Length: 58
Image 1 (cartoon, rainbow, N blue to C red):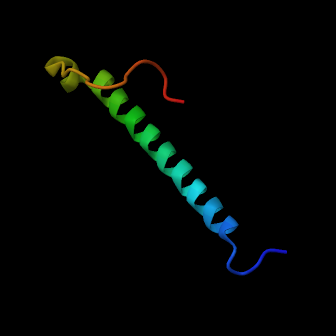
Image 2: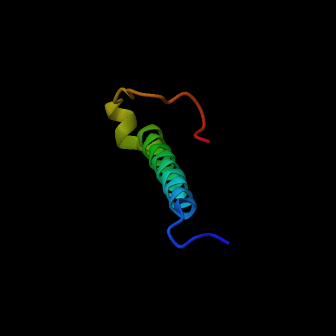
């Protein structure tokens, strides 16, 4: 049985929040790169992608 002031729950919540944040960043990067590659306007403008567009986002 855990004590009411246990840090285990806080650690689990922080870990879960960090994972959710990383997944959100990966999702938005994927959406941005897809837009930059597939959009006709972006194909005409040909912006340089600076960063880590090296494959599928896992």
